[in-house]
Image 1 (tube, rainbow, N blue to C red):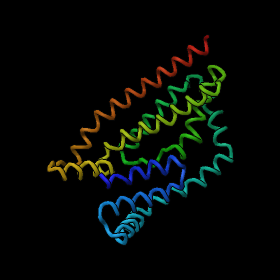
Image 2: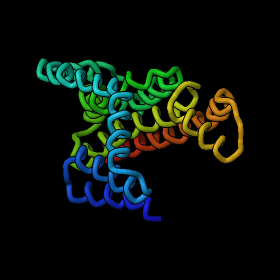
Image 3: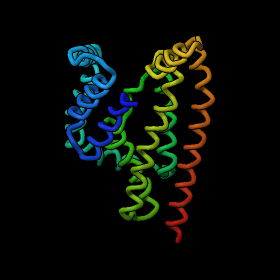
Length: 221
């Protein structure tokens, strides 16, 4: 059970709002030491993981581009665009994005969306503009629209990526099953992820549709 003390370090570190990188490194060291590993071996594993996954840092190059686009008025342009579409409602905008996000994730294109790249600069402003066409938004309703925009991204990528056979989650499940004596091909895991993805889409699309109805009822009141 001492090996799980690394989890406690992560929870405590984030609760104290400590530097995330420092928290993760300390948690890794605590986990390795409690597992009986030599300190040098733990450091070597951390270095190997960093080198093997250094391509992840490429995503940070997107942030300056997003910042320049926001400074250039991309959020305002998104609002203007959606404001011209009479049939646009927050629910319809977010259901469309949910579908696009899930389809792209099933093809392995999980980096096409995201909170930083898409939700904050484009999707949330578009949903807010669609909601404002029905009635003025108070602070609570505006936050709820933004939360639904973020949830559409989360649900789409989380349940869509498992349909792609070469995604990390599928390989993780395959490795875990093999450790417990269950040999299964990754393609079979992907096939069985399809019903889950469809159900997740239906459930969340229904939530967005009900949210639309509540906004319409509020605008008529």
